[in-house]
Image (cartoon, rainbow over all chains, first blue to last red; front, top):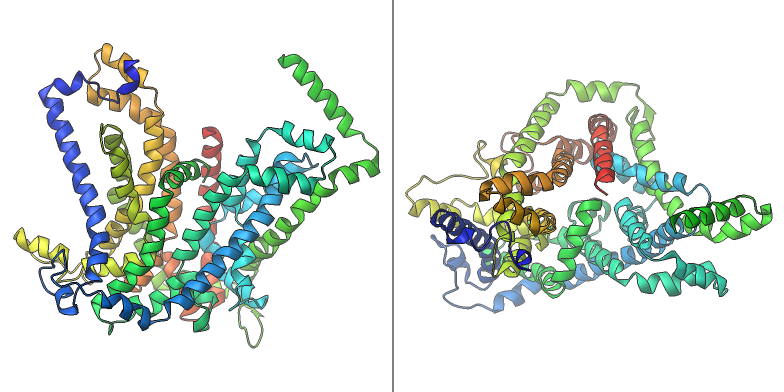
Length: 290
Length: 307
């Protein structure tokens, strides 16, 4: 029983002074790490609530001396964050739908439907993993241009279905569902689309949720690719707009800059804190397969 | 049990192999239909660009006048451009820095955090938190942190050290970027290693301790060997990722100062979107593919062994 409670160190080890010192140093480094992780993030928040002279004062203060909540309002007025937010959500929702339908169906077929030559199809999807993405980034852009998709949401939605990594995650998940369930459904006369939509999909909520988090963070994070694909300003994503109007601009007051940065960090931080168990499991999962 | 199962499998396989032709088509109709959308999308948005990449590297790409065949001109231009050599050197330097500064950090912290008796959950959340920050926030935040009058220089000042121009000093620029990226990314690597560290059976440590192995011996002979495959896999993933890195170099410094953060991928981007020379950019991409293609296969093989 006791062996389950121990780590590399046992209770006995911790009684030795030399080990105690090492353990103390280790805890100290962890504390330093936690501090260096949290300090800049909290600083983003507090800087957004300071007066501009205070943000630029040297050495910097941690807490604001005066709280300027009006900065948040100025931040919302500086650029139309809500429009960019809407664009980002469009991309997220569309990517999600396409991923679920296109990759969901394909991975279900490969995993559970025994089609002839499925190894060939599987390899066809998998092959793209060996090609470094940057090496075909430019032709990819030229291709979108030649297809007439530039400056359209479809330029994000359609290619979302060509993600080998998500395909593998889905396929591995379906591999874990007992095939008997689907055989029983077949015997009961359920058509294949029916057994996909009313059996496989409900069973796959966990993996869809993991994918939703990945797809959300990509849509929220990507600034460079959308800045190439979307060239009219009203179609920028949040990250692209912030890069163009906040990061690349020098004239903006630092406190307003931080207020904007704080506002865009808030949703992903909240999503993370709410679903942390789920996300951290997803991270461990994605690594092994990635 | 097993034998009957395999016999049954063989029998069903036989039955499946020789159904009536029409039946087989009917039976697999939906199976193929389910694959069709994915095949179309993969062809249109993966294979066509990849194939076009190969083709365009021999063309002068012009959206207005149409493309013209250029033979090996693009490759010749790419290989004689002195910037390419600089970019290759910078990329190698960046990759080495990422290994030296960043690679071991998540491993060390995963082992340390696995030993925490309390607050392990809080520490994990704190370590992962920077990873959820959007990249643009990271850039804005660190530009301020690295500022000559920012908090890091304030700290150096109170310790009596000289100020450092982290971003504008060409000796520091790349190092500063790597520190920034390590800060953001180590949490996710740490969680992956932590899962592996925690899956090592505790009894092994117990047995080793009874046999008289000290703490370091346990780490060296049990923990690290158990992580070996994962470490190799993460190493290859990191090399694949860092060899293609360009975004923070572009966002914070645009390759400067004096081209010290001009990486190979950034040069591709610049050829395409600053010089509008898509042909040479694709040729550079092809050269990258030739060098990196092998690594992807190694990663895939390792992954398979792991599973």
